[in-house]
Image 1 (cartoon, rainbow, N blue to C red):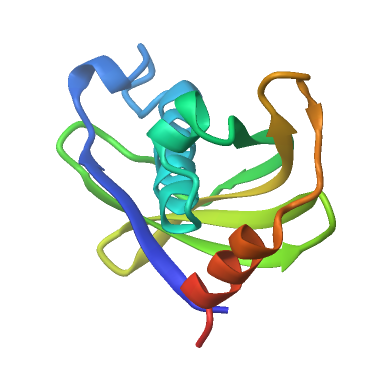
Image 2 (cartoon, rainbow, N blue to C red):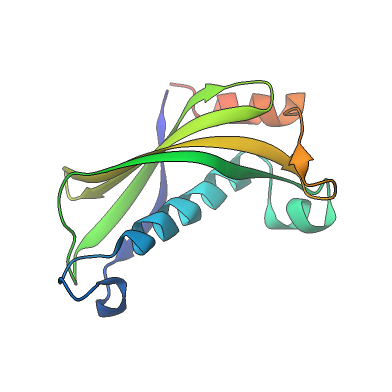
Length: 137
């Protein structure tokens, strides 16, 4: 499936730990930012989450791999792909690039949560269609 440019940023000193490279917390922040971009493209906007259908995808599981270090001043582009869509869940992969170099990737299992009952719910047909369309080749 097609990847989407979901977020970009420049590594700041506050993103780095005392070892001089970007801290893992900032990687997860980037994945979160990219995830909200994806949800908006799928029709789950902030307004829809808060005052509309009150649905949002949440991370149920994550597996991450660091390939290269990032340091202060590095410009990072995050490209995200939808790998699979299930009944109540989906799998996405967020990949961080410095130029053409893959530096980090994380596979997330997302579950659609009803924000009122705080339990998983079936992905509505319109959202499923938007997900598929956004990532169609």
